[in-house]
Length: 101
Image (cartoon, rainbow, N blue to C red):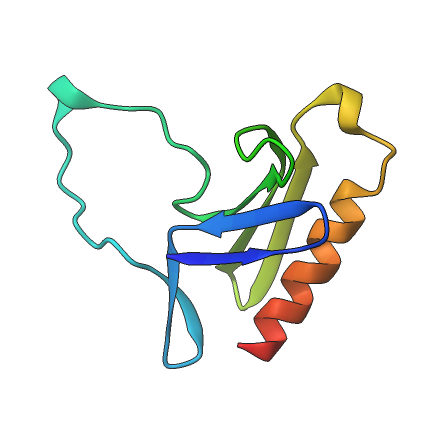
């Protein structure tokens, strides 16, 4: 599991780094259809929570590698948090963290 903090955010992901690459930590692909739970976004990306409340989901960033290139998707999860620089802070810190690790 990956976790780091910025000035206002806590980042979490269930991805792991192996040999310098982001990979899924859990490789158990069995599905119990009687116990399906919604995903939290950490399984294939990064979620950012408010440092102040630790439970308020602020934004998310997904990174996938397809067709020989990386694709990044992102969004702010709470409408009232838009326009306050959270996404910029999240993307800058994530890019720095990825290159540093």
